[in-house]
Length: 138
Ligand code: IDP
Ligand code: MG
Image 1 (spheres, rainbow, N blue to C red):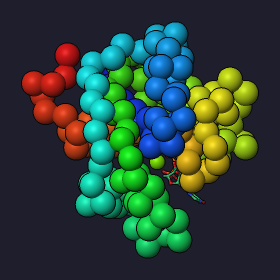
Image 2 (cartoon, helix red, strand yellow):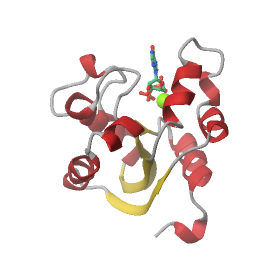
Image 3 (tube, rainbow, N blue to C red):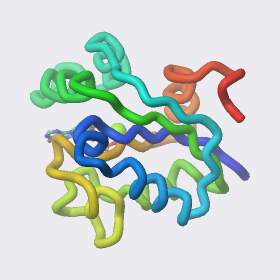
C-alpha cells in the first residue's frame, strides 16, 4: 500500500549545501514528492515537534538546533514509505549508519544528522499535518 512519510532536511545540511544531493538520493530511491516547503521553525515549533523527547538530556540543544536556521520539509510517497525512508536515511548516529545512507553521506554527528524521517505511519500522519494542510498535498 502507498504510504506517505515526512522528511526534514535539518539546518546544518541546508547550510552545508546538501539540499540538491539529498533530494536526488530520495528521488533515485523511488519516492514521489507530494509537498515541499523551505521554512525556519520557531523554538515553539521545535519543542512541539520533538515533544516525545522532552526531558532527555539532548532535548534543549535539539530544539535550539532545529530552530537555528532554514530547513526543507517534504512529504514523500511510495509503497512502505515510512520503513523504506528510515532505511534510506540510516542510523540516528551517522557513525553507525550503513554506507550509502543519507546520514552516512551528509551528517556531521548524532546531534546534526542531516535529516529527520517519521518512525511510524501514525507519526507520519501527525508530522505531515504539523507542517502541511490538505490543500498543499499533491
Ligand atoms: P531519529 O531521528 O533517528 O528518529 P530520535 O531518537 O527520534 O532519532 O531522536 C531525534 C533526534 O534527536 C535525532 O535525530 C538526533 O538529532 C537527536 N538525538 C537523538 N539521540 C541523541 C543523543 O544521544 N545525543 C544527541 N542528540 C540525539
Ligand atoms: Mg525519531
